[in-house]
Length: 186
Ligand SMILES: [Zn+2]
Image 1 (cartoon, rainbow, N blue to C red):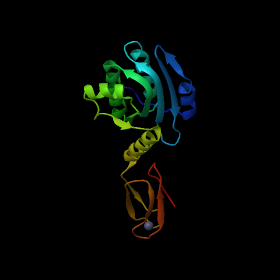
Image 2: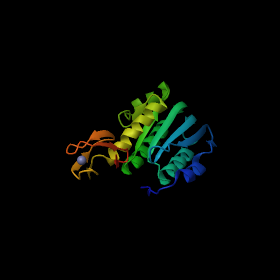
Image 3: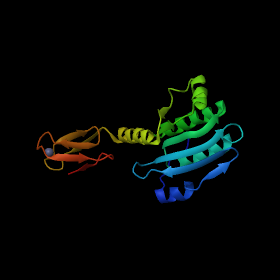
Image 4: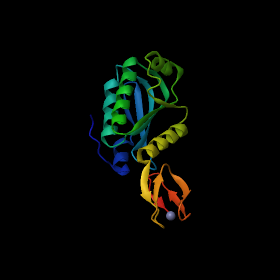
C-alpha cells in the first residue's frame, strides 16, 4: 500500500512535466488543475518485460505524489504484454484503494486484444478520447464528495447535496450553486 500525500501542482509539474524515456517507451504526464489529484499520462511505444520496472516505478511515484485519478493515454502504444496488463491491474487496485480511478484511453486493437484475452476488460474504465477520459474522472471526483448533508446558507434548512450544479432551496427557494467540491455558493 502506497501512502497518500498531497503535492501542489507546481511541485508535481516539476516532478512529472519532463518527458521520461526508457527502452521502447516515452511517458509525458500532465496535471489537470481543475480536478484534484488528476493526471493525464501519455505513453508512447510499448510496455513489456524490457521496461515494465521503469513503468511501475514511474506510476508508483505518481500515486505517491497524491495523484489517484489517472488517465493513461494509450493511443500511441502499439503493444502491452500480459505482464504489462498485470501492472495496469496493480495500478488500478492501488488507486481504487485510495478512492481514485484509472481510465484507459484509446487502446489500439492489438492492446485491447490482450486485455480481453486476460479477461480484464470489465476492470477498467475505457475512453475513446482524452476529453471522454476527463469527463469520467470528473464524474469519479464528484462521486467521492457526494452525497453530502449541508445547510441552506439563507434559511438554514437541511439540504442533501447529491451532485454539482444549480438548485433551489426547497424551503426559501433561493438558488444555490453547488461546486464540484460539494461547497454551496450563492
Ligand atoms: Zn433556504
